[in-house]
Length: 82
Image (cartoon, rainbow, N blue to C red; front, side, top):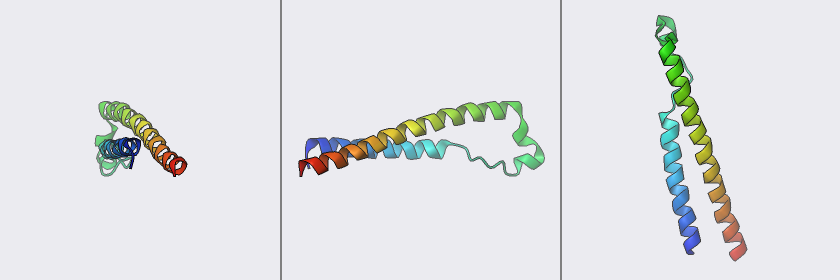
């Protein structure tokens, strides 16, 4: 393994761990029992969840793109050096 493969492998590992954490932090889209009791319909919970979910969704997309570019880079490097 070359230095570039090791660096891209470490980048993939770090980005995948960060992506897992960001996905876990996102709230589910199911309303659950809060819909029946009216607890899910407060103004503050709607706006807070929407802004936080948008922020986390954006970072999930960014980390996914970085992950795929790193994977393609590793495969291209391995293909062209052998």
